[in-house]
Length: 293
Image (cartoon, rainbow, N blue to C red):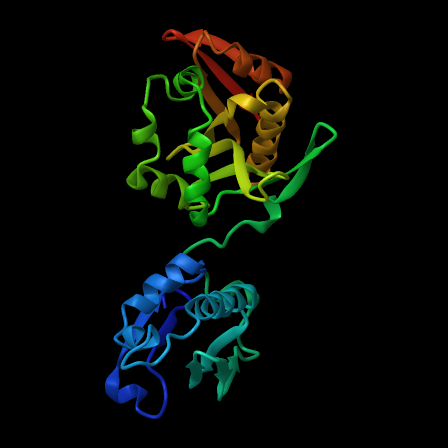
């Protein structure tokens, strides 16, 4: 009960309780987490094709599991939901039977099971015009953004990296899987990173051109914030806009104070903080920015 809703995936049909081929996961899921859950079952190998049979459409099955997870997240009044069996083949998928149980009238909204993992904060998605041509989507980071973050770090100069991290990190260190998985998989209750997502009109490929991060400080009602903008898009108002979005997020998250450390050489970040009304004080060789919300 302490985990709230729990998802189960595995071999179905009449012998489901006999084979007990199943895996558990906590919603919400993305396609990566859905695939990892399926990989824990024995039937996963059969789904990929055995004895000359063609594999099923794994991407479609992943998306179905994600949609199932989204339904549970969005409809907390659902007590139980079964699709069993789900018939899958290379030709498609068909739900042969389903069952839904709703919480009874004795259940109050305040006592509904709570998700152990906070869902993706859709409310922080919005658009912003960069000049006359580019329309950017500013949104919370997603786990599947890792390849975009690799390309983003390739657009940064040594100076931008030094201003952000206070020391040099080479590209190999910045784009390592172990590091990016921590950055892209946010616990949105503790940390929210906003990315500026641009669709390149020439290549038709999405690219991240800026990242702003809000990290809550344990034990205090405050959060640290930081901004990193691709060199090509600096000095065009994007850093200021991203900082303002972080302030709006902090206000909705009921954070009392925002703080940031800024190197003396980082004049751009100092100007952004001054525009937004931050108090700047020099201490321990760096500028300490503070904004009470």
